Image (tube, rainbow, N blue to C red; front, side):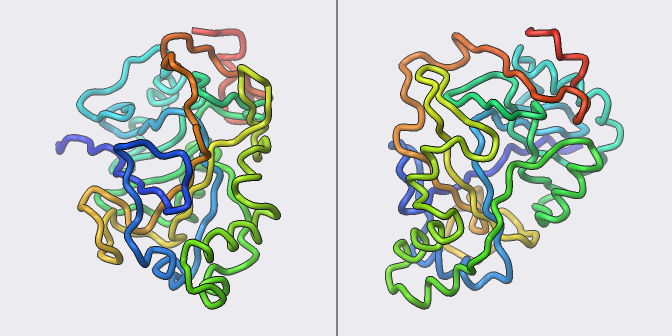
Length: 265
């Protein structure tokens, strides 16, 4: 059996504000490339840990060995229930059991799926939703796209201006203002209690390979997906794993987490 491969690298939009020195940006022409696709998906980026459910184990960011972190325990229990049904499917989701820089007041699950890989292919968004429902997970919150990106590329020669205006039209406010709201899951800063959300992910609604050949990116980088992150997203000097606390769900039964309602470790 081949070793499990970790989630590939997602690049930032040029207008993304929450970048660090080792982050990479999408190449020039990326907005036009996405505008030419038949359909896009706009989702809220959640502040958690990337976990992968596969027949080979439950993995965190590194796929060198299955994870054994204490904040992965609820997901490890879920993996035991579904591991024999996964086959070649790999389910990637945001693990929100351990609170990071953002806490959420409207969580219904400890894991929100955002991608499914089968062999080397990333499945379409509709297939992601199908398998999320099949394995009893929600997907990350989707924001309805009412205005096509191509319309804004036709109006603005500057592709980053086009992207910025497209986001404003679909969010009802600028994306910078939007990340200062609670988003769709009631996000807030656990230190100040101020509402906030991390950012957004834009992907091709159809299925694709990591490097689909649409843009000049590295073999391990997505060219059919990119992200925007709020400014100064991680503002603490102490890593969240040093002082982590478990999240609380609004409904422990909806997605099968009832055994964790009165457990904290």
